[in-house]
Length: 458
Image (cartoon, rainbow, N blue to C red; front, side, top):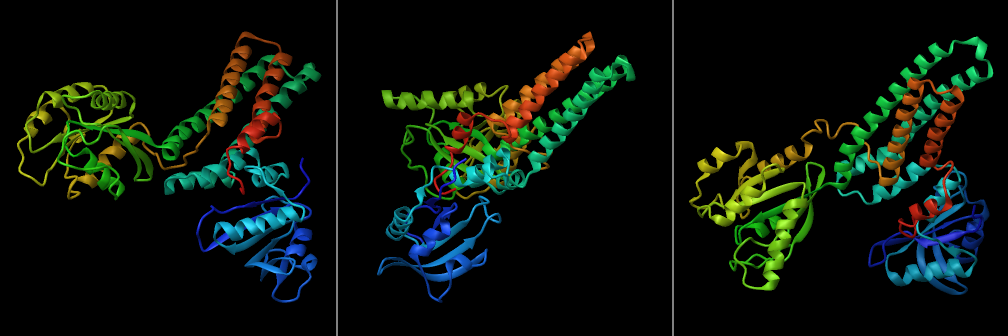
């Protein structure tokens, strides 16, 4: 446990209206008293908690910046320590000057994620909630933000508490049997224990199922746009991201490598990959672009095949269409705003109509319907994708799956008549998984690895 006072800039560096320098630790107000000059005469040590005060930051007789000081006294603060936030004018120079004064007067530059780490170490939040802070910050859509905020408020932690209570109850019953074997028949105890293990396993399966949907909302999916050169792939990407992200010309082969952008499709982040046009290549660079386009077709969760509606289907189009069978795909017939030469009925004969969309990447016609089809493919098998979703990071998912595996092993142990003391030890192993998830018992290296992913100042 660190007991010194830390400080950091908690807002992005750059030109802005305001910037925040944050302090936390036992000497926060001692340091503030040395550098803050309130506009109204007040005693820093007596300032009430959760109040804001106007004044100046000064280095001796030199005024550094005009600021607002926010006071948050322990334990009613983010870290449960004495905290202060200095609202400076935005800009690199004033923030750097104020931060330097804090360090000069006894604070230490905070490490990445150290404020949140202190909140965890001081018991304000558990480790699952601490990790969700980073998830909130990195949310790409409103839906992703919603499930991250729920997790921060303790939705997943409450599930872990329920699992822990159930495991502790089962363990207590088994230990009572070990200590007082004459009071209960072992056979009836085993039947009841097996039933409770089955219920607990089903509960965990439900969490993992909802976590699968939550992962889609948090991390999204890859959708590769492929098609012959000049079919309009880059125009579609630009329309979806609402800016000229890809170069669009009438010259075939303008896109030499994949261009990627994330768009929001009904709350799901969809990473759109605009690939090089499929055509007869004239050079090594173009060939590499085409090869990568084919690679993206193989690894993307959704394939968006673009056909040029003003032209008849050629061998390149047929080659692409032959690759999508067995995959998640949508066939887009582009340039719907122009006279059509493509044989749409022939395509509908070979592919279901709900996988075909007529669009115009130039005017936007048919794009809303295309987005609905994309969403339909993503949510296939995830009927209630927005309801009660949970996001588990790799560490959390790994621990939950390991615990489920142990419960299945316990179930098998009961079936073959393993002694109660062995089952008790197996249950204790499951409880250790819970403690590692919540951070009650976790290796320091793992803890350092988790908080090192945070930015400085959070």
